[in-house]
Length: 479
Ligand code: 6PG
Image (tube, rainbow, N blue to C red; front, side):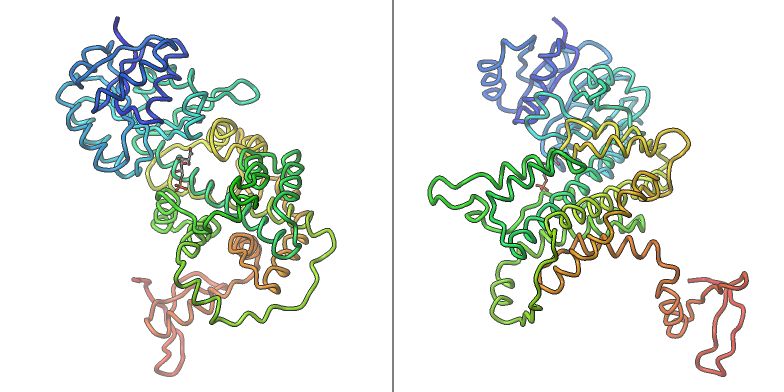
């Protein structure tokens, strides 16, 4: 029996994707460096569909129909290169090598170019939804050549999550590293989304004294409205959970240092290269960084003055926090999508933001009701230059602004850090400001480095002779 797809790397994500493929009627050839893992999978789940057991990569390749589709599910980085290097000599022109890990998009671009020279397709696919999603329907973001998608797309669309309207949460994103890039930005938004929820929780607890169990009910309620999303839903579950050993709320027994595997950091690093202002996403990465500086935090607790203001929280504080969370969350999406637009220009990808929003509607970690509205906002030729300019959001975020300001002001007065709430509001205000202090910065740059500036009242590039008589000369901007 020849298999339609092969999977190498049967740790939990690889195993679950293989099972998902088999459950959907595809014959799946299995390979793992240690055969024991393959056998364990077959022993436990072998009856879920048609699997072909293989012991070597050669056997895996021989088991596949042509063009061959080989899905690599190993740790991002050097392990992917190692498997690719072993696979390539065994393959034939037109075969498709797929990397379903969280690889860096630049690695994917490099691998795609290298394999294209050999007549092979290399497809980096972003897969979101964790272990459960991999098994029951993830959101899938495939890059690579359009041609490869013809052979691969039908399988991926079959195993992907389905949105409410039945559409698969999988669509060809764009050439080379586009799929992994979009997955990376998904994770950047995920970081910001998690941080704003964390800030809301912290404010409700520290400023309003609302205990986790009571907050769980608040988050459950919020999950019925505009904020309805997977992350709000699981937040209620985490807050409700009680530690069996101590009887304390679970959140109180967990060390408050957030880990990170790197995709949030990559988003910010790439955004810096693109000059894309993802301030909320960046603050969410830095917030994890500060949380992990436990030694410094211990010193600061006894060293740094607080001078918190003695104020009461505003009336309707819970509702204010909900609105601040909504607005800040939207800014994170706006920043992430704006970054995608910048990347599309830089890398020549024709990224369709409505399709991307569409395939984030189900299966992935940032799935949220809001994504349907975002998808609509980018449909057809009415795409806004920034998500915040879409009429639906001009109105809903506009309504939230008074509460957003009250919440940030209250947090600042009480000395409670709200880096994403506050930086998102700063982004919003910076966008709408008539004049920014950047004019002063241009003046400073011109004074110390003759970096030149433009004037508001006429065309041209100018330099002031600061060290001479202060007169202005025309200049050619060479800096
Ligand atoms: C997903 C997740 C997944 C992973 C995160 C965790 O979309 O399914 O994003 O890829 O859980 O990368 O990231 P951190 O360990 O960096 O929080």
